[in-house]
Length: 493
Image 1: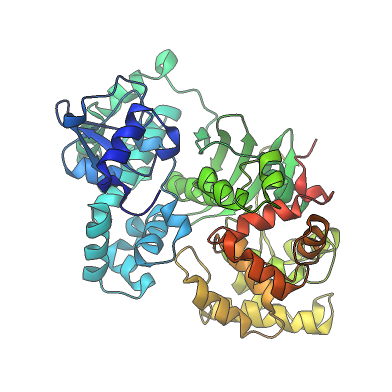
Image 2: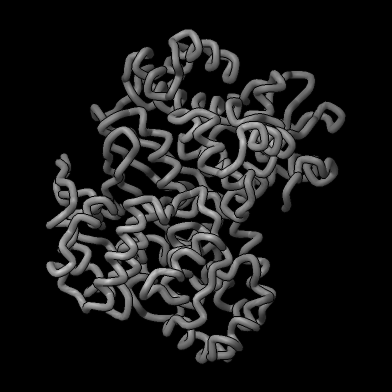
């Protein structure tokens, strides 16, 4: 699996004929005779090879005049792993588009965040994906509209507004063009002819590529949960979300073939962003087969991979929040880090109402923390200086941590802050910024696991051995951590 896979016709035809779900999101099959596009795993009888053409994105299919298949719903397939694996312009642009930046700030806003001209961004996206930023954002709006039509009782005018369309006409035209059905016809196809939903709450299914091991993923989120902001309840991880138009609460429950997602939003326009951030937090667009194949090639890692394949990297919905929490967790236990964070939340977080009870606040913003008197922070002076330097730079824009961050540049900026050593910078790169190759050779848990497995235990020697694990060293960290009996490695009872 690699960039431009849609150009490898023989490989694509083979994947379609075998209905291989591993390739969903890597490319799309457009059928010349029916003018329909499908995911590779579509359950329908595969078309003749000469009637297939392959495109790199749903947006490219739609631009070429193909409609989404009503059986396999290719618009809902997991996203391409490319965008989480790479740190180049196209990957960073795709992460921003998924985060709704084009809808909120337009193409000039997208380009400004990336530090390129609008023309350069357009040219690069067209060359690799066959569609520009507006078409890619339009395809995303269409999928959001479908979700709202099928899962909520919202009037169509409100659906159009919430999905990001500028007019009812654009909404109707796009839905008809993409799905070959009107919005009303889409809703009529829902079992029972009407969506069942609590007002303001959406129930969704988040797909992923199998296998997915939920143990360390949800175990880590639950074990490090900050009271008031996060909790584990009735088999679900729940947390509050700060979103562009308001706030939300999400509950995420692991299922065998999907993640059940229940979203309560203050403003429905935040749906696309909320879904994107939850998918990133759970690393749902990863390619576990490619990751595990690379790590399994090391004979000392192979037993760990074979025992529990499909481990993901637990990430975050808010990069700045995670950086603050990484500082609070320096050289203290998980319980102590949660205590420090909970104090900040109670004192400086924004209160909110949780209809189910249990969650009380949004995590404090960098601006709120930058205004805090450092002398009131109950922590050692050196860590206090680290925290205040971090939040000050995050608040004034000197340091920006986001989905579009250049991983190497962000690391360098973090390392320039007082108290930010290699471990803190790399754990932020791994869990906040999403670098799949971030590595923690100085981590005590990693060194202990290395010794037990017969791997080199010194940071330099372990780093040298880990060269063969690239570009998936962040996943190797999860497998090594999982050798320990810490609660982060187990799905809560």
